[in-house]
Length: 335
Ligand code: ATP
Image 1: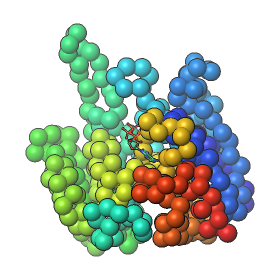
Image 2: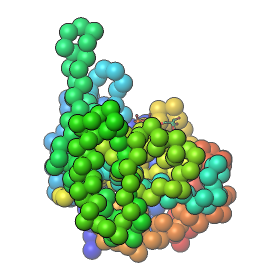
Image 3: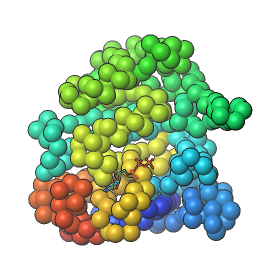
Image 4: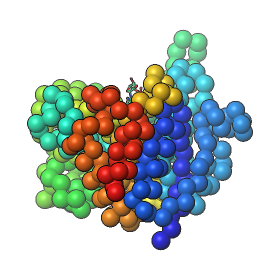
C-alpha cells in the first residue's frame, strides 16, 4: 500500500538529517510518496507566514508527518512553529524513548537504559503564553487542565499496558505549584487506579533530575507536563549518548508527527557532521505507526547493526563518519 507522508525538512541540520533518513526509509522498500513542505523562517520569507495553511492542510490530509527541527528565535521574533503545530493539530502526547544503543560509551553504557518520557504537549508554561504587563514586568501563563492531564495520563498507562511496561512515574512540583501540579497528580492517580498491574509512583522534579543521573535504571515511563518534559527529555538523551540519539513522536487522535528531540543545532549546520540517528529512530516509530512493522524492524535492526559494528559512527558518539557516510552504512545494512 502506498503511503503519502508530509515531510518538513526544517532548519539548520534539519535538511541533512532528513535527507539521510528519507534514504534509509526508502531502502526498506516501503512505498511512500513524500510531500515536501516548508515552515519557519524559510516559509516566512517566501509566504509571509511561519506556518502556512498549506502545511496544516497537508498534515490534516495525510495524518502523518516526518519533521526536522524548526528553529525558534530566542527572546524576540516569531513564536514556536513546533508549539503551533502541536496545539493546532491537537497532538497532545509527546512520546520520547531514550534507549541505549550498543557501542555508545556513556557512564551508563552497562545498564541497558530504556526510559520513556511521556510529555503533555498542548499546555503548561511551554505554551509561551506571556505578555508584558508594564515595562519590566512580564506575566507568563501556565494553564493546566483536567482534560489534558487525564488524557496524557491515559495515554501513558494505556501504552504501558500495551507494551508490557512495568511502571509509570508522575513527575511534579506539587509542593510548590499546589494547584496546577496538584491537579495533574490527581488526574494521574485517578487513571493509575484503572491500571492496577502497573506500578505507579510520584517524584518531585528536582529529585527526579538527581535520581536520573545517579540511578536512571529505576525509571521506566516518566509522565509529566510540557516544560518539565522538554527539559527532562534532554537529560534522558544525555544518559544514552546525547541529542543525536533520541526520537520523539507527537501524537493526536487524528494526526501524528515524528521528529528528533534535538533542535536545529546551528553550530554544526551545513557541515555534514550531524548524527541522523534520532530522526531515523523517529522514522522507525513512524513506520510502526503506519502499519509497516517489517520495514520498521529492518530499519531498527540496520541502525543497531551499524552501532554494533562501530565503524561508521558520527563524531558526537565518538566516531569520525559524516552524516552521509552513516546513512550509507545504514542503507547497506538494510541490504
Ligand atoms: P531547541 O531549543 O531547538 O530544542 P537545543 O537548545 O536543544 O535546541 P540543539 O539545537 O538541539 O539545542 O543543540 C544542542 C547541542 O547538541 C548542540 O551543541 C548541537 O550541536 C548538539 N546536537 C543537536 N543535535 C545533534 C545531532 N543530531 N548530531 C550531533 N549533535 C547534535
